Image (cartoon, rainbow, N blue to C red; front, top):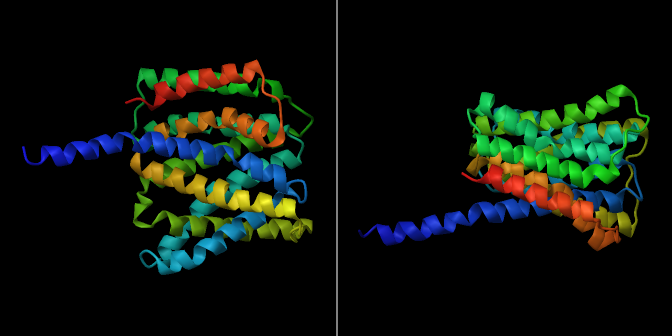
Length: 298
């Protein structure tokens, strides 16, 4: 009887943890478009990715060294592999696909199907079974994403392998997500693991930028705004909330929130770049909301 009043408020507070984290994840994940939109006016995609990951890693480095447990060589190497998968191959694969003239709308659609891949992998890798309601919600959410993306879809003239690259990049990040959860890497705080991920990506993106001769950053206000947005929101906020949520909730539930990234991106575009909103987009948003609600319940 004495313990009950102490336990109930904790349970009530925990009810609000997932909605709060899901909202932060959706806002941060969808904001990557804004930073790319600013920075891409001044530099190539490889240059943007190099400076995004380098600045993120360097900012986190003193905190990673001073705060948290001592990072052993084995732990660092383990996290570097996740950095290769979740930063270099994921972001770099989509960047190369766009460079090979795969339409941006198609690239974005493939990226936004990430939760479907994670849901499929969660059962064999993590033993997280989705019920019939969750699978129905997943199907509805995918339908909503297709509706939102319909107006921007085209197939372009890119080589066949470039289209496969977009699917491969998405699957690599899905695999990295479920492996990250299965290996219980919670022993290393998020700021330390994210520092290693971004510095690993920076080293690889830097090598690619040197090969293309486009490593120097444009010293312009627009590029600076884009970098600040990509580092603070699309990297620190998005990845930190994503990895923290993976430790607290089922992987399929966390990734389901990403289905709302396309409709929220359209709101960013409307608010910052005056891009038009259509009835189809709002219809897709409504369908996606229903699907995410069904997938996240229980």
